[in-house]
Image (tube, rainbow, N blue to C red; front, top):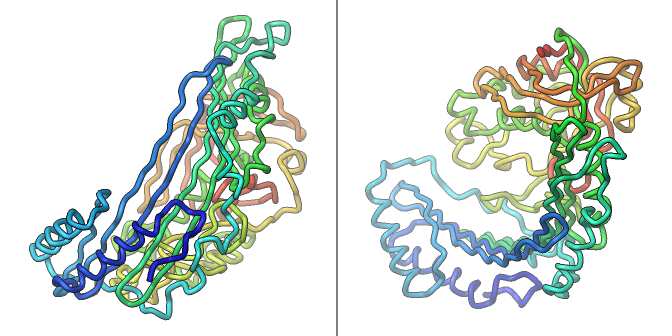
Length: 454
């Protein structure tokens, strides 16, 4: 039975075609199947140096089929949603499936694990009705309002703005997931975004670039006026970097880039890395391997909050759970297949909306700097890499030397090296200042005894 007409952009006709495609696959050789229809619409207005640069309108649509037949499994994708084309595609996919090696551990998740509360797609309150009222003139007005080019600083302020690229965009994303054991989930959300990429030049001709952005599910919450101003300030603060000696020291990592140190840790808890024996967190479930003050929670069911989801890519219901609690690993992210390969209980396929619990008693960046006293404030990472298997990393960094809790001068072209398990055993502070626009709620962090070289 098709869904009632909802504010999302998936049409009743597309829903019906998806349902018919599922029935067709089952009647032509599939033992079971899962179909996921994704559709998104994006409108963007770009400004360059205060003038309109480009306008774009894009619509993306795809239908992903996960097919199970005779112990074999395959995933296939098509964006042509026409009855005849879908039938031909499914027959070809089932033919391809016969060429694959059997994998008896492949299956749909059991029905009791799937989401039952994602019926309309609107349950998480992530759809802004204001989106339906947007038009080209409103988008252009918002983009023009956000630019600082007309009021740019001059060399009298110690620098001049020499280029500014501004982008305003709004979008709606709609997804429908159905499978052959009765799972039916929908998720609909809007996003309004503003970003400024700005370059300044100092009196010597040296140039410094900075980017600032904001994104919200609701237009009323978007910081249209402040984004370009913050980009100017960030670029100006980077003027005049000086050399800084290396060694082991404390580092404070700004919330804007702190996820760089969290993502590899979460990836190492993922089923694929664990199953491939390519994880530095292998065999740690239930063990205390990180510092006492390391607590990471998954909070995917927070209504109105960016990144929230009621179901994962398999339709499994998300949960509000601890991932790491006081340094003890509480959660691996295991799909139905990776769990079966590892002879473990399945969970969700990923940490949907990670949140780090505050520790160290500081609320924001300035309080952490004052409490830590001396070290390097990292405001950006410039390249580098990490090893999933060993946890070793080497990242280029930029930011500020700080002493007595105050920034002394900018630094750049420095390198931070070590391994993630040691790093997270040396966590001293986690604020409560994570930006609301980020799906990963990672606040400003501080670590001790980090190896830095200039």
